[in-house]
Image: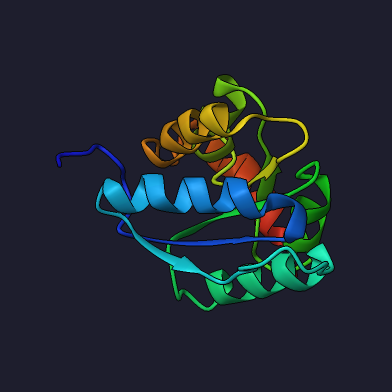
Length: 152
């Protein structure tokens, strides 16, 4: 299958509330030829979202994969957890424009979804938009450099 997804390898993770959506996104992207590293969870047993969010963000910071997707109930908790890792920019996405601009303007390496906010079919569309875009630099480069400086 030909695809215009810009990456080869992606990390994905969720808490127990995001399990079904995470699995749907994983399967969707795998079918498009993306290598997906699923860091869990893989059952409905309760788990604390900061554990998964920070784990994926650390692995991404270590360059194990190029980008990441995290899912919890609202997406907010996962974004907060991932953003605690130095060098990581995570954005909670609920609409097509934010999915595009998260990477095009903000060079976000991770997007997050809320399984109680966004339906799975919409999440698949938003993941595709995010993964089909790249950082555009230009006028945004100086702003992203300022974000990077906040990590120091």
